[in-house]
Every structure is written in structure tokens, then in C-alpha cells.
Amino acid sequence: MLVPFDAGAPKTRLASVLDERERRAFARVLLEDVLGALATLGVDRTILATAPLDGTPEVAAPVVVDDRPLTAAVNARLAGDLVGETEPPVPSHECPVGIVMADLPLATPRALRRVLYGDPSPGTDAASDPDAGRERPADVTMAPGLGGGTNALCVRNPAFRVDYHDASCRDHRAIARRRGLDLATVDSFRLATDVDERADLVEILIHGQGTAARSWLRDAGFSLATGDGRVGVARGDPGSEPTK
Image (cartoon, rainbow, N blue to C red; front, side, top):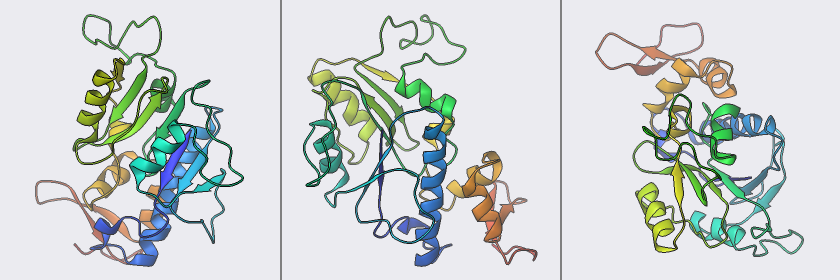
């Protein structure tokens, strides 16, 4: 299981509410939540980082450094290419390769299992869900993100390659179609919710009970801001009245 992670300048779109030091710390907390959810599945986890991960907290998975753009770095792993002199390739011809983004704090083992093992969507049948009732997992299983991205993949056929630019969930469907591969889609709120914008923090505060990300935000003085229609977030010193 690969978990790509930007160790350089993560979460720049949160600059309006978090300074650079805080963004780095928060990104590590998001990563911690994802690794924790994966740990219960008993799968091998590898952090595919753009730079070495120094400082605290220590990460609970091996780190492979690859400073290439995300698409190139992941495709190298899918192809079984060497990333470092001492790092063995992923034997993609022998086993599935999963890719889960590092900013999915709401991800649960149950949701991730649907991607990794091709489980059908809960409460659906073949008549209502074309991905349900398969005799075998699809060549590729994908969990789209809100806004058209791709937040999780499980690749079971080494012919598949990723393309994380723009509306990547659409592109991944097209890639699978061109290569004669079948692709199943997992519809999951918890896997669709990545954290890039200030508005995304709302979902953590509402739905992230028990996550390190929610605890971090609350300790940093974040709370829900209500009363103006759409729920937002406000920040103040812990114990004080929040400000918008």
C-alpha cells in the first residue's frame, strides 16, 4: 500500500488559517490517521514521500523518497522500477498495489477494505450498482474524491497507469478503457473527503470523532461557526471565543 506524501510544502491552500509550521504539522497528523486506518487491515504500508521525514512524530511505516511529480513516482512503483538504490521494486505482476492519499482523515478500515478487496457497496445489489456482485475484483478499483480527484486506488493489473492531473477520476476511467481493463468505483463519503481547503476542516470537526486530525484542530483553537447558513470554521485561542 503506497501513501504519497508531500514533505516539502504541504497544504498551501490552508495558508489563510494555518502558517507554514502548522501546515507541516497538520499534514503529518493527517498522515497519521491514514496510516492508523490501514494498520488494522494488515497490509504492508509504504510512505512515498517527496523528501525525508524528519522530526516528530515518528511515522509508523517505511519511507521511500521520490521527488518526482506524483504521477511519475506512482507509475514507477506500478511498473516495479527501483526508486532507491536499496529499495526493492513493488512486484506488481504478483500482487495488487494500492494507493491511498495521505489527507483522508475520515477514512475507516471498512471503507478502505472496499477498495483493497473489491467488496461491493453496502446495501446495494447488482441491479442498482454495476460494481456489485462481481465474481472477482475488478482490474482497478477507484474511490473518487470530491471535485473529480482520485483519493484511493487498488491496481490488480500491471498494465494500468495513473494520471493525477486535473479531473483524474475521469482520466483513470479512460485509461482503463483504453487498455481493456475493467474499473469499479467505490462511492464513499469518508474516502471522498480529502483536506485541501478551509471548508474541508468542517467535515473533520463534524465527522472526525476519534481522529488525530480533529484533536489537533480543536487543540489549535478551531471550532464550528454556525448562524450564517452554511457551516464554516472559526479559530480562536483554546478556551476563548472563536473568531471567523
